[in-house]
Amino acid sequence: MARRKRSFSTFNLSFLDIMSCGFGAVVLVFLIIDHSIEVQSQELNADLLSEVNMLEEDIRVGEEGLVALRNALGETDEAIVEAQGRASRVTEEIDRYEALISDLADDGYTDDDALEKLKAEVRSLEEEVKRLREAAKEEGGRSARSFTGDGQRQYLTGLNLGGRHIVILLDASASMLADRLVNVIRLRNMDETVQRQAEKWQRTVATVDWLSAQLPVNASYQVIAFNTEARSVLPETDGSWLEVANQPQLESVSTALGKLVPGGGTSLHNAFVALGRLSPAPDNIFLLTDGLPTQGANPPRGTKVSGRERQKLYRDAIRSLPQNVPVNIILAPMEGDPMAASEFWQLAQATGGSFMSPSRDWP
Image: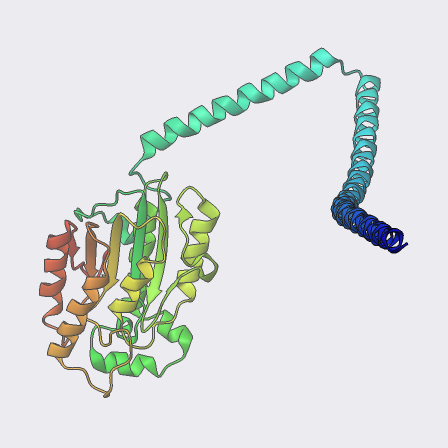
């Protein structure tokens, strides 16, 4: 009996061991399966998230494309409206021209008649252009308009009146009223009408008229008056060139000269700076003055300017002149300025221009 009991006990222990091992195996299998499901679930979630992100990106791109399409559609609609408007205008023009053609036909015109008339007009214009070009070549250097001095006087001046862009600088300071200081002071306090009729000023205005009458008809010009400031005689043309061939404008310049009243001091610096406002630069300059300047860019500190100071102001001013341009000097008489003739003569020689001090009856 004892042996049977031991066998039975051994059998029970073995069965329990087997059952424990089996249960452990089941648990192990379950754990393995659960881990596998979790891994698969994570991989699946990652794939799904990736697909969601891609879909969201596609949606964003699609929305941007939709906005672009809507904008393009709006622009297309505007283009269609504009095209319709242009089509309407073209249609109206066609109708107008057809009506015009119909009216011409009613008046007895034919297509051939109109064409021949146009050809004749073109030929006439071509001949006129050719004639004007030939006249410009032939008249280059000849008078742009007539000017006759007192007593039909004519003098050999030696002035070079050529060039394509010619400037006349006119001194309109108070000293241009008379040759003597006492007379300048007397006239300066008189009525403007009397000042305009002053003998010295009238000679100067006549000189400008004479010069403008000698300009080449195919050239450009400008007349700049200066005292302490510089401005064009025709203020609305300041900084621009005028055409000599424009006769009405040339006469306007002459009329404006007759309205000028001399006054103030003399700044050659400001006059020469004014040349820089012209484009292209001048290639011939005429300077009408009666002496050395009394100020530079700014008024002098005192009420008197010595001869040496005027000479220095003059030499500072000529530094503002454009390079390689002849300066022709017409120097009117003035007492108390002995260095003027020498300085201006040297300027004319250095620039290749001419110098003259005309007689009282010139031009």
